[in-house]
Amino acid sequence: MAITDIPILSMIRTRMEYAQERQRVLAENVANADTPRYRARDLVAPKFDAAPASVQAPVVKVALTKTDGAHIAASGHSNTAFRTKVTGSHEVTTSGNAVSLEDEMIKVAANQMDYQAATALYTRSLGLIKTALGKR
Image (cartoon, rainbow, N blue to C red; front, side):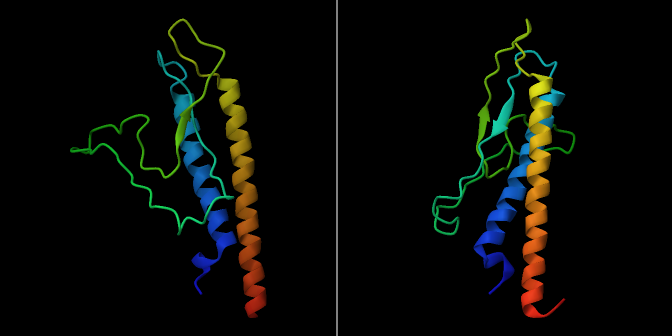
């Protein structure tokens, strides 16, 4: 049995991938804090109470094609397996921008703590497997 087949490690790895992608989305929000009519986005957290990913239908990724290296990637369209959502904000500037830097920085800090917890759990789980195999 491969390590990638162990369900708990697969779930932790999915959680780490989610945290990495969420960090990218939150960074886009901060970068566009002064862009007119920009709405903050966030990712929907993965649910682990459903059937395992191997049973579910595969996620089809659709993205715009860059035909030249100088093209900029389209905002809001990424090759992510996680769903995005537009977050509602009560503060909207006169330009129509609805990004609150304070809210985004709180989300970034919480996301960083979640990622660190997941990596620590993953590392300890691998250490436990190594101990069980007598490799330590």
